[in-house]
Image 1 (cartoon, rainbow, N blue to C red):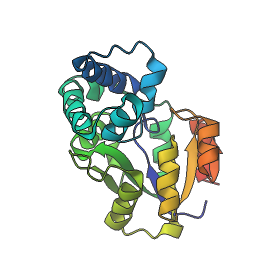
Image 2: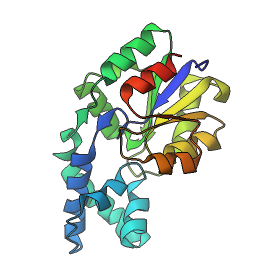
Image 3: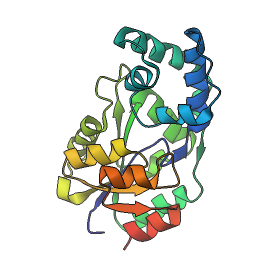
Length: 215
């Protein structure tokens, strides 16, 4: 790939964050008397902003969705943040890209308050030139805004950037900024979701992603 700047989503792309997010969502839903036994239903929360997810998937009003986000973080800040693991092969992928002279950035809808501790805890922070997320209130958590923020932060032009992510929100944000996008299948999105959104490339595994990015 000719692009010199590679932007990575965090949840579902660099780290397998499902357990912490699911446990945090369940904790919040219980405050409203909702018992959700289906993990698959909760995987929908991985990627989109929390207020959007509580409103869209469980019909919360905007006011209650904001309150639910705060309750979610009661659990997440203490437990969920590190109920998480790095996908196999990711450190090697990042090291290979750096050795090839690529500029690596994180572009996540997760608040930076949580993003930085996760990257540092799992020894990933050292690979990145710039890391951008949302504010704590998630007022700019949508991927279109986050990707633009990261582009401005690292000084990258759209035609020199490729976004790597596992959900349609990553593709939508990339397209809105005129950026190419690789959809990965080892995370939480499906091939159908990513192709329908218009991903330029699909990488089923971390090895496939490395071959593609270094081609």
